[in-house]
Amino acid sequence: MKNFAEEIAYLYFRLNGFFLLDNYVSHKSENNDRGHADNDLIGIRTKHVTEIVGLKEIEDTDEIIRDFMKGSKMLGLICEIKGGENRISSLSDSKLKSCIKRLGLLDSEEEQKAISVLKKKEIFSNEEITIIKIFASTARNQSNLDGWYKIELDHMISFLKDRIQRYPEKQKGWNHNSSSMLQYLLYEQRTNPAKKAKPKSK
Image (cartoon, rainbow, N blue to C red; front, side, top):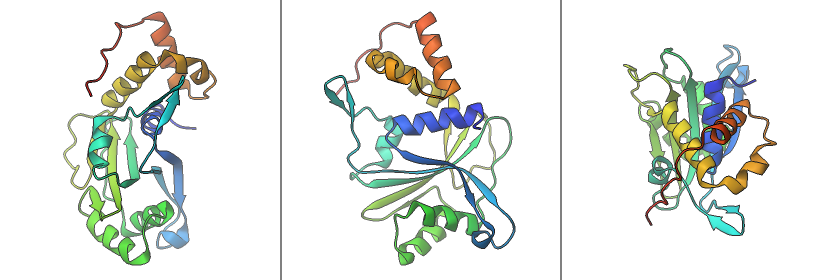
C-alpha cells in the first residue's frame, strides 16, 4: 500500500503521461546479493502522449516535465519519494543499473553511459532518450540533493488540484479511482470549490 507521499507522486506523474511501475524491487542477483532493494517509482513517458477529455484532445503537461521533453524525446523516470524529513542517499551502482535495465530504453552500451552519468547527475540524455532522477519530498531544506532534481510535494498537489478544477468532466471517471488521496482531493474540490482557473496561455 502506498503512503500519502507515494500516492501524490504516482498521481502527479500518471497525469503527466507516464506509464508507471511503483514499488519496483531489484532482487539479490541485481543488487550484489545484498538483498532486495525497493525503488519507489520508475516509469516511461512516450514522445506523443495526449489525452481525450470530452471530445477534445488535450496536452496539459506540467512545465517541469515539458522542459525535460524538449526535442520530443522519450522520458525515463527514476523517482525516490520521502514524506518526512528523511534524507535521500545516492543510488548504489547495482540499484541504479537495475532501474535503468528495467526501463528498457537503452542498449547495453548506452546503459553503461547512463549509469556513469546518473551516479553523479540528475539527468542522462542522448539523441532519443532522456532519463531523469527525481526526488519528491515535503522537506524544503535538504542538504544532500546532489544528483537529484527535486520536486516538492506541494507543487505536485497544486498541479493535481488544478487538473481537477480545469477538467470537471473527468471527475466522474476519477470517482472510481482507488487512490484515497485522489478521492480526498475530489471531495475537497466539491466542498470548497475554488475560483475558476484561468486558461493557460498558448
